[in-house]
Image 1: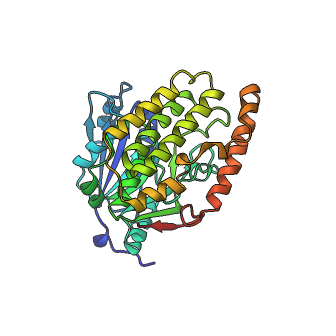
Image 2: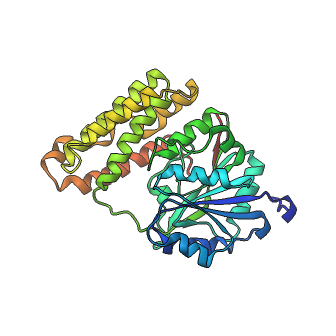
Image 3: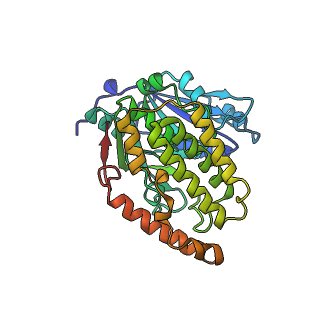
Amino acid sequence: MSTPTTTDLPRVTVNQLAYNRRDQLAEALEHLHRLDYPADKLEFVVVDNASSDGTSEMLAERFGDVRVERQEVNEGVPGWNHGFRAGTGEWFLVLDDDCYVEGDALRRALVAAEEEGADLVSFGVRSHSRPDYRFDQEYRLGLIGFWGCAVLIHRRVIEALGGYDPEIFLWAHEAEFMLRVLDRGFRHLHLPEIVAVHIKDVPYEGEIPARTLLFNAEHLAYIAARRLQTRDAVVASANVLLNSLSVALKRADVRGTILQQTVAGIRRGARLHEPVRPEVSSLYRRHFHEFLFPLRWMRSPLRMLSDRRAGRSFQKDLRVRQQRFWDARPDVYPSGRGSLKV
């Protein structure tokens, strides 16, 4: 692998989205300012999503080179779009406020992107508190998704797609964005050997928080209904709805709302229906496990309904079944480096 000279390296905008994580953002920025990358080829933009913890004040005091885009309301994920508009880089390093890359990671990623002709580069993601824990290995997204806390996106992608979907406040936005990336013929390069650090605790192995379940159900239903071809959309939306039903049977705390929000997502997506190309739509309907018939993941729905202790057993069994699913599709979920263009 050739090492580019300083003059060859592209200008990169570090685009971070912040919401009430002042201390984590400060730590991340400290690491980012020590990157093995020419300072004159880096610019920093932080979109402050109406934080109330003094984030903007901290940035003004400690990071005078950071351009702050202060929002009056918390816009969620679409807040990154302000950073896309403000940035001048050829590439955007898109980061959560509690995420960073270290050392020569950015340089290596850009060299690989140049060699592979990639337009979007995703990374491995590890826990800050437990370095042996890899978020991207626990929940694999392969080449049809990415962990949104750290991703490298070329300006041409942003100019073509206009950024993240303003209809998705939080979670599942990566799947919607990647659908459009592949639909426009761009190439995704996954580099698991380059690892971003997430200042986040390892997830609790028991029940998924209710808020996460509700957001994911609504947004996955919306994505299926809006972005897939009609036939694929019907199948995928029905499967998302069935999955919500199975969750409602198991979880009393979301029983009264998850089906309503899933149906709302389907209706909203159908109203805005803009399908991707048939080959991209079919790829997701066949290989994106969130769009597949959910009972394949479940060992015994009746047992889960009758025995609350089955919660953790179900989670363990689910992980085993998901791992088998990923391993059976190495072209879509490679264990190492891989790239995809449709």
